[in-house]
Image (cartoon, rainbow over the protein chains, first blue to last red):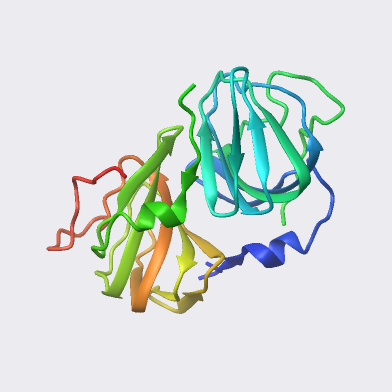
Amino acid sequence: MGIKPINIAQKFDKFSDVWSPKIVSELNGQFVKLARLKGEFVRHQHIDEDELFFVIEGVLEIEFDTNTITLNPGEMVVIPKGVYHKPIAEQEVKVMLFEPKSTINTGDINSDLTKDQLDRL
Amino acid sequence: MGIKPINIAQKFDKFSDVWSPKIVSELNGQFVKLARLKGEFVRHQHIDEDELFFVIEGVLEIEFDTNTITLNPGEMVVIPKGVYHKPIAEQEVKVMLFEPKSTINTGDINSDLTKDQLDRL
């Protein structure tokens, strides 16, 4: 059958670089990705794609233009398309991302942080 | 702004019925759902939709026609469309589901367990 469970913790053990999402699964045109975040990311939006952040470990702040939210482990947020956001991780954070295959991490911004070729775990 | 974190544990505290997925968020034509599972579900397939199970608490078995997998907390699986599967939870399990808005819990099977009107938490 080949349908295997995916152990999230074990997948995180396979990489250590930050701001570099890895693909762990896909379904219905969407990717499930894991990423380690540390420091301040670039403010950006995704013009056509909503984006889900689910925090596995650590505390993630997401700055919007008018407010900031804090996500603890076991908390998630969906950022609608067209909403500028800036993830900030004072300490390292492990997140699961759920978004369309077309989504680029820095959205409409070209940056040294842009990753357009993602590894699969 | 109105973009708020969703605390998964708090959402689970809002319901106790089993085999009755609740919608907690949506993005890109997909729903994020939470469900409590206990006992044996009906074997079914989703003809056009892949389905993601992510176990938050408990141990979930999923029977396929040729093998069975076991999912522990922190483990997920994607069941491709067209694959018959039967979830079994010996003890109560909390799962997060990710699937297209069109997905019905019992797929191609009409059953007393079929839920075609889902509550939102």
